[in-house]
Image 1 (tube, helix red, strand yellow):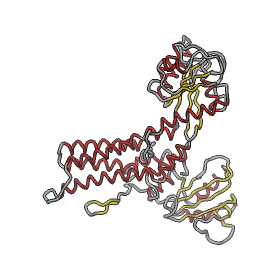
Image 2 (spheres, rainbow, N blue to C red):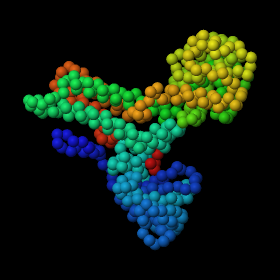
Image 3 (cartoon, rainbow, N blue to C red):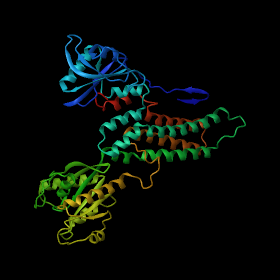
Image 4 (cartoon, rainbow, N blue to C red):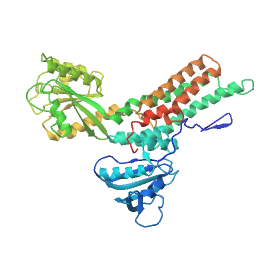
Length: 477
């Protein structure tokens, strides 16, 4: 909602949904102590009344759990002893009348309750339809709705914290601030368009261009947070590289606390990339153990080495393994070259054996990343290793000088693309302003930037956009 030329403009979605009642399990499938079956829509209370019999005859009180029996209206047969609650609109999850049954968590029981709800007039909810209705009814904006899916998919504390921040409106508030600045620039241009003949002090083109320049910098900060947000959401991908028998597989097993990779004294045991993940502090680390880097005439091993190099190129973080008990070899120098201009940690392994090389030797060969003397067979050193890797991840994810706005990180390509469109429009507007183009020309790009920013929170969105967003949600959300 905004004011323009004295009129109040309310942006509303240009689509509607059927005013029917939907039902779905709101808990994961499979055996469990408790499952939740959720109803939402105009007939939610009516359908609940037809299939649920409270233990006491008093009417259902909003937001108060009642004990009773779930029954089949057609036969009167009791299906389960359960709890039920009703939540009237508009103060509900979806903004509609919502009813929930908390039943025993057997899959058959859940299927039977959903089935009798369907017979009573509901239909099965589509993926994400509950959250979609919450958006359409103004209970949350589109960025907050997407945060719901990110919370469900969170695999680390950092991912969860970022999703919760967006669900609480941090991203939406920042986008709204940026959009209001864009609208303010448009207002200046509108005054010039409408009152150019009046004796009014108007901003010069260079002043307008300076305002746009400051806005470009602020939008760019949010746009550039995508890489950091993606690492927080999906985890940091780390590839362990080193020559054969440097201890890569032992390191993987040590970090995972399990014998995930085969470890032998035979060089070249690992032939393919082995992937697994581990939680380090607030972060998720996706580890790839790889074939040793060396020249090989074995076709299978050569393919494994090619996959090693590809995995190293795609990794966010490199863990470079060096065997301190053996002199430096050409394959070690190849590993050092892989770390050039990359984030990572070097492990100088096998320090329990007589040393043939030191950290100084690696530095002389051009290794720049931090070095950790280590012994992969010493379980007590796992704590130090995890701490050093956590520091390396934190340095990769967190900005060097965080500010309040820097803490907001986008993690969805849709947001990044919308911000990129806003940046392009703002840069075009700045060029037009500096070229002394008519205000109408500048205003076109300014409003394009406002539309792009508005699409993040759903102020300007189409049905196809919503379909693309919510089809990846689970049913029941």
